[in-house]
Amino acid sequence: MTITSTPRAAARGSDCAVRVVDADRVRAVRARMPQESDVADLAVIFGLLADPGRVRILIALLEGEMCVCDLAATTGLSESGVSHALRLLRGPKVVTVRRSGRMAYYSLADSHVRLLLDLGLTHVGHTGQDRLQVAANG
Amino acid sequence: MTITSTPRAAARGSDCAVRVVDADRVRAVRARMPQESDVADLAVIFGLLADPGRVRILIALLEGEMCVCDLAATTGLSESGVSHALRLLRGPKVVTVRRSGRMAYYSLADSHVRLLLDLGLTHVGHTGQDRLQVAANG
DNA sequence: TTATCGTCTGAACAACCTTACAGATAATCT
DNA sequence: AGATTATCTGTAAGGTTGTTCAGACGATAA
Image (cartoon, rainbow over the protein chains, first blue to last red):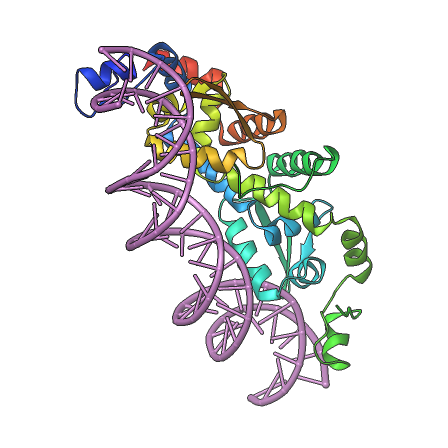
């Protein structure tokens, strides 16, 4: 990727370069940018927390392990839906399973996820801010 | 939603009730469950952090405000892509704009998002300061 | 004024994700 | 053994999301 000193310079001199206003700043921030794989992993983790059903499952698990059907009763999801959700969460080791007979007891595997949830909950609960408004922004 | 005492009881007695193993537990957890709107808002916030491009934008903004074209140069996204992403982030007030002439300088609006990012980056295994050293050495 | 610049937007398309249904699996009971 | 249970999985439909393209808008310079 070519970086020219200013947007104006880019337009004057070369063809398809990336326009930059503060080149030093861009260099500094790019130097601190985590590597792509870490950013991708981070996005995956946040993506797992981006579904209300999965969030309810994880909030339920904050209090300790639970079996699939109790999670279904707690969250309002179907048992199949809970199972699908837990499969996604099992992959990146967000939750772990303990199997006993034909029961499967799930619990939070990672304290970081617990912190993310707590932080998020205090954010939406304690800021007393209005309902989030995503669309229709002037 | 009907809740029967145990999965077996549900199968024996009634038709389409939600099966529950530990009824008291389910009641307790449901009592503590945040209301649906808060869970939805939480999922929206996490959803905004669920895209690598938006994560790079927000990481860049951790160091201070930036204009759109510098964000594009920093993150590798197109300027149009950055603008679309910033629109999403502007809605729930995750970022704010300061306009000066035809420039638009964006910055993080909410310290909670900053904390979420820091926590996530720690989870993934790298802090911004570690990155500095790594980048300096190659 | 005209030309250029930085930013924003709408539309279209592909890729993805969620959900529900049906069935499969393994453990347990009669 | 067969029936029942709790969980898991494959599949497909439907909706959502990210990206690109083309152009629009207001601000600025010539």
